[in-house]
Each structure stands twice: as structure tokens, then as C-alpha cells.
Image (tube, rainbow, N blue to C red; front, side):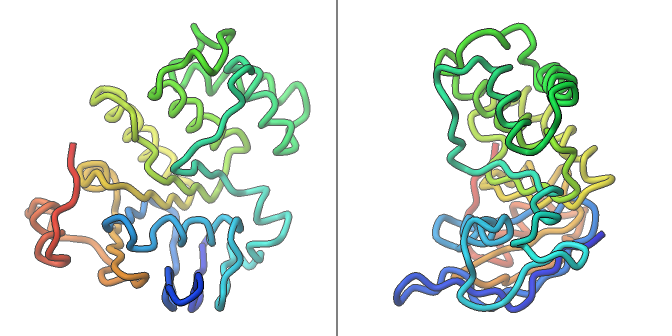
Length: 234
């Protein structure tokens, strides 16, 4: 099981957002750090097939990013998670499950299971527009997991969560990384520090660090030493 990114580039007019990035990601959690404008979100959208690259390719276990097989094994939580405000939480998950090709019985079973996992069972019949930001984020995490993805791409998955919820979802993401390739982009260094076995640091569209860090050293200090700029932490 491997995600392959080969000389991937994306250019918007004169701006090169992603510049010849090559990576191979195996099962486990890989953290992606970098400031706004570094190219993290563009890279993740390329990995999810939302954007077409200017050059290069993305594949998972030999399946091209544009194939049905690739999409069938992909789970994605974007930074700006869209939702249908008049759907209930459960109806939203059932709708997303249908979009991902689950049959009705599997959709109901998986939706109920994930509502419990993210702590929304008691509000599943309430409309999404009544949810707090943190509750909507939890619903977004649930929809990303509906198809039991082998490739999970998470862009700021703990945004809007309180510290207790953040720890809970860090633990969930770490568990998912045992059997899936997880790419986690965040501004929160502690999220990466606790669960990522591999750290990517991105600057000006390029990966400027790829590897582990000295576990005896605080990741914030490591980040500063490698990157020369402070990251967010919580």
C-alpha cells in the first residue's frame, strides 16, 4: 500500500504553488507543516484529484488519481468543509454514503457507527445549521471515514475542536494510521508531534524537510531550527 507523488507541480498564472514534489507514503500518519501560502492545501487537492496538475502524477497502489479505483479508496476532509444546512446530521451522512456508492443497509450501519465515534449520536436528528463549528468539524471527519478509506487526506481536521476533542481525534487518527496512509496537514504542531511518525515541512511549494525528528527534542524547536518561522500550537 503506497501513495506515489512523482514530480508534481501546479502553477496558477505566474505563481508556482507546488514545485516538483516527489514523495512515497506508506501506511502511517504523515504530518504536513508549513505557513499559509506554502502550498499545503494545493498539494492535498492535487492528491485528491480536485485540481489537475500542471506536471507530474499521483497514484495509489498503481491506480491513477483520476480512476474510480483511486476515488473508491479515498477519504478527504477539506479545510473548508461544505455541508447542507437543512439536512440533519444523519441524513447528511446517508447522502454522502450514497454518493460514495454504499448501499442503503451499509450506509445506515456505517453512519450510525461513525455518529457514535465522533460523539454526535444524540444530535443526529438536528439540522446541521444548528451545529457548532466543532460539531460540524466532527461531522466532516465522519463523512471522510464512510468508505473505510485506505488513503485518508485531512486538511486541518482538528480546527474548531476544543482541547479535549482534539486529543480524542488525535487518538482516532493515530488508530486509522495503522492500516491506512494518512496525510495530515495542520498549523497545530502538537497534533503532528503526538501522532505523526513522519514530518514534511513545506515552503514556497517545495518539501524542505522530510523525515522524523529527534523525539528527545520538542517539535516546535525542531520546526524553528529547520524552518526559521514559528508555527501555531495548541
